[in-house]
Length: 77
Image 1 (spheres, rainbow, N blue to C red):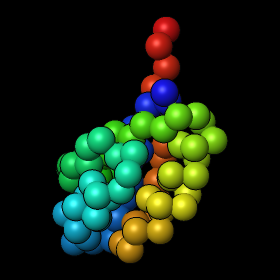
Image 2 (cartoon, rainbow, N blue to C red; image 1 turned 60 degrees about the horizontal axis):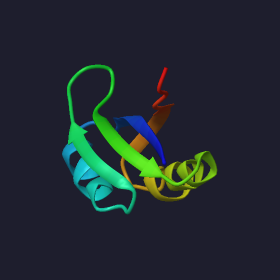
Image 3 (cartoon, rainbow, N blue to C red; image 1 turned 90 degrees about the vertical axis):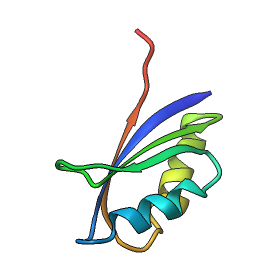
Image 4 (spheres, helix red, strand yellow; image 1 turned 60 degrees about the vertical axis):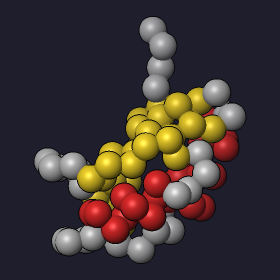
């Protein structure tokens, strides 16, 4: 199982709606709106890195109001 944090920037005033929409996507375990350089932080999981990529590109990035994403896979050192 691959886990990742997805850091999201949104259009002004859209963070809460984006977080709520993303929370309903399969593979997303948590989505919260936050303050700082990013507006929403998502915790996601997938069976492989390829699956994670498809989740981000096909499902997350298609949510209305998102302007930029940064995906940070979790590594166990």
